[in-house]
Image (cartoon, rainbow, N blue to C red):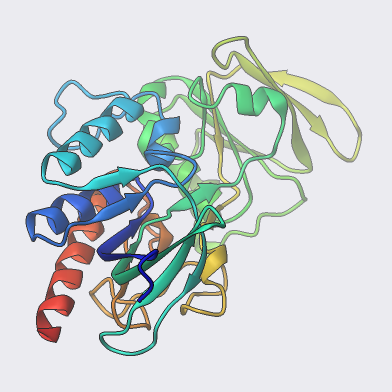
Length: 315
């Protein structure tokens, strides 16, 4: 090993609930973890203004503040948190092999184990008004933020199972839910479509797209356009939920680690083990079903335990 190349016992890539929880457990197991945070320190949760459903916060918390708490706890046990982006990997396929990564396209590091917690990025439409009001009424997670719109009118954008699930979930909380569907049909499964159709306070608007989100600091309504007639109309709502999918942040692991057709990393049975020894995946990067902070944290714990047991078996 070159004197200029650092070797780490447990390298954690990503700094959301999964990454920081993995760090807490890895540090307590004396694995001396190092986290590279990625560009968005704290992960997706930092785009959420209020978090009310994470255990241990009876009064709720600001997403960024919560992630700072996670960070401080990880550092208290000796985790080294570094700001940087892993830009390339060269992973060993041998038990006990050393994995090599490149940080910021310049610094090379060797790691005995790697925990991948790079998360997933919600897909948005890209409108300026939409981006500006994320956290101010625009959300990509109904189960995270729906509670704040209890008894109010909201809009969901999407045509697949995710949109149908988000809409039916919101229908139990909100006064009215309007689904905007770009085409003249929904892509959701027949079962989900039937559920939407049977829910009285859900209205589906076909051939309809978002033209503008209205409001300065919070959502006050949306302007939509019928893509067949070009007719525009304003819908008075306080919440806008974008449900057009998520993209797992796994580009650098393409053709290296097993992943599904969308790009989520595949883990073995009830573990966080990937197809390569000593490489583990936790959080939204391998979970497209739940995508909650608490479930991400749970798999972060699992990944650290899996890494500890892996290293212990080598001794």
